[in-house]
Amino acid sequence: HKDFCVDELNQNQLETERKERTKSDLIAKIEQLESKIDELSKAIETLKAEIAEMQVQLKRAGEDREKENKEFQQTVADQRETQKLLKAALSILGEFYGKQKAAELAQLKQEPAGPAPPPGFEEYKKSAASGGVMSQIEQIISDAKAMEAETIRSEEDAQKAYEDFVKETNRSIEAKSKDITDKSEVKASAEADLVETKESKEATMLELEQLSTYNAELHTSCDFVMKNFDLRQTARDEEVEALKQAKAILSGANFEGFLQGA
Image 1 (tube, rainbow, N blue to C red):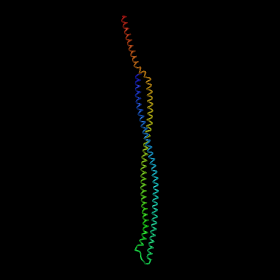
Image 2 (image 1 turned 90 degrees about the vertical axis):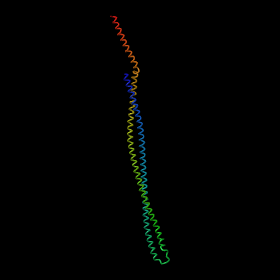
Image 3 (image 1 turned 60 degrees about the vertical axis):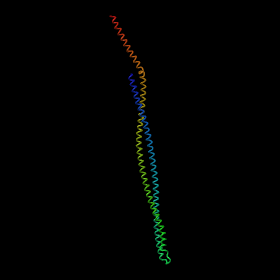
Image 4 (image 1 turned 135 degrees about the horizontal axis):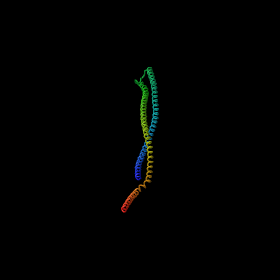
């Protein structure tokens, strides 16, 4: 019985120490998994917030682009209308000044001779007046065309910048969305691992409880045996020795009686 008790107590101690190490490892793993899940959750929320902000920026950029395009359309329409009106005015003035010049030439031919103005003086004055007005109109038309061309170039640049922004932002949103998917998969795996690890920890705790209960039972059953084994062994040895001595004494008495009888 002593050997059984010694073996069982030693085995119980070894198993308990092994399970305690397992429990410590599981607790550390649970802490790591919980930290990992927390970090992944925060990272996913950050990515979602960044995507939401990018979508807001896309919406604003689209609204701004639409507004700018309407202003562009209006500006170009105004410049073209201005050019149209000025060209019409230039044509009318051209006809008017042309007729006026012809009438003046005809009148000069009919007027009696008299002191004549300096050669070309009167014609120069009228020609300069008509030419000055028409030159101004032509300059305005030229400026309107230049403004229209500049407006178109600016619109093309703005449209290209908007399209590049949309492409880049959509690429970024796509990359972040994929990152969310990847992190969500890792998080789901970690959560499943966490559940399994917690279950293993609970099972280990139950085994430790059972080992502790068995240890108590062993001590209840074996402590008396272990403490009194040496005493009982000594007593048994003494009993055996006493029996040997008694046997020897008895054997010696019989032999002496036999001798006396002879």
